[in-house]
Image (cartoon, helix red, strand yellow):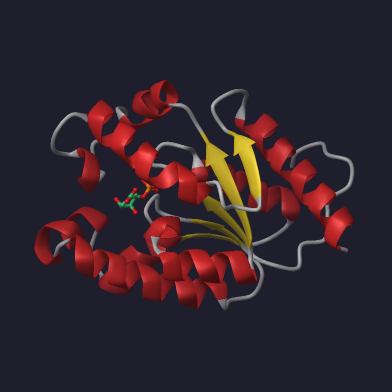
Length: 183
Ligand code: S3P
């Protein structure tokens, strides 16, 4: 448990958005422990629902089917009791998911620069969108397409600098400030 002062009372799901490699799952798990909330990862929920891995869904059924499944799973998860929810990088780019998250949850963008993302995604080669072509070029394109959308999140936290504990602390402080403003 992080040594934090006030832990704000969370009344809406806390949804982490951002590009692949931003640290959504790792930070999300730790944030959930700090807030005393359950943690869910939408990619894991999609894998459970489909009965196969994300790579297999892309390979066998194609990206459009994955996006459809992602939307259904995300809308279901948003209706569950309050929890911390880590999303796949493309989730918040879907306008229907984005609208639901912005209306029913608190969206937190883990903003990270390209070099940090590249370093992190190079450790695993399981992400279908990065398995072909140049990772730097793909991530640069996704940053251009998605950063304006991620910027609609209620809270933005720099997840490139500092430890996971620092990032969790920044999110909790931002949630506290939001709670103070919105009651
Ligand atoms: C994707 C990100 C992945 C996963 C899928 C597509 C994306 O999740 O949902 O491979 O479109 O950015 P992570 O962001 O957790 O890697």
